[in-house]
Length: 70
Image 1 (cartoon, rainbow, N blue to C red):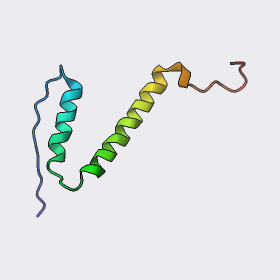
Image 2 (image 1 turned 135 degrees about the horizontal axis):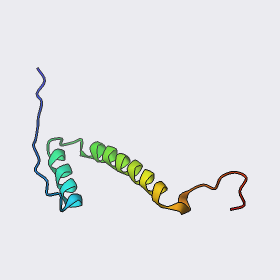
Image 3 (image 1 turned 180 degrees about the vertical axis):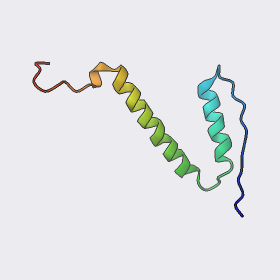
């Protein structure tokens, strides 16, 4: 029989970054020995989101269209 662990979090949305960090720390405490793998997956997901947001907001990262003189 599988044991499902569940934690309920209460977050102060006036401190989003700090609360996300604390939430990650809480989750990691349930997975000794797997923290590195979990953090690498979180890092990849955050990196993907950052790249997507930066490409939308930073015109210097955009590739000029073919056939233009820019």
